[in-house]
Image 1 (cartoon, helix red, strand yellow):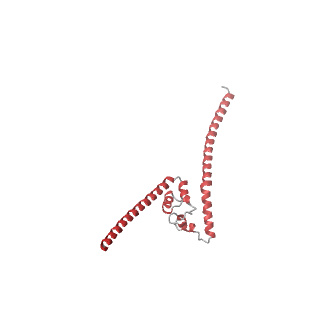
Image 2: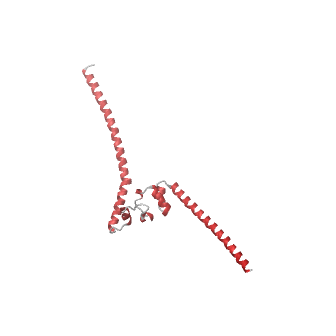
Image 3: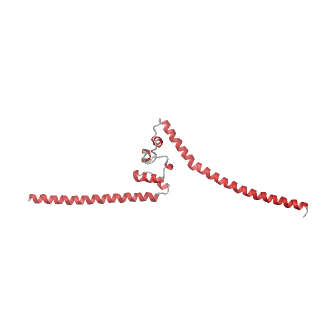
Length: 166
């Protein structure tokens, strides 16, 4: 092998090594770009709307002279089931409320049906409805039994009165 062939082989080896390094760096760059895209998506779909909502509520609170119920309740630690705004179904911070609290609000106040379905909790909502319907049916059955017993008692009293009269 002459000197030029050796230089050629060395350069070829050097370029191949650089090519491998470029591929490795490109792979890392792609991974970083994917993470960046994911972060941008989260910012646009979760954080920006939440920040905007909080800004709107704060602005509402300031313009109302500090009398905005939602902000005042949240500020005093009554966010969730204890909050009258939440109980009325008008909460603007539902993304911060847990699934269990949303389901409990549905059970207690019959609110947030769409939010429950949006969260994929339709089965749980239907189970709550079924429990409530079964309870109502049981209550109706108890009242019917009570009415029947009352009717029998009235009949007995009428029979006693009839006997006393005759």
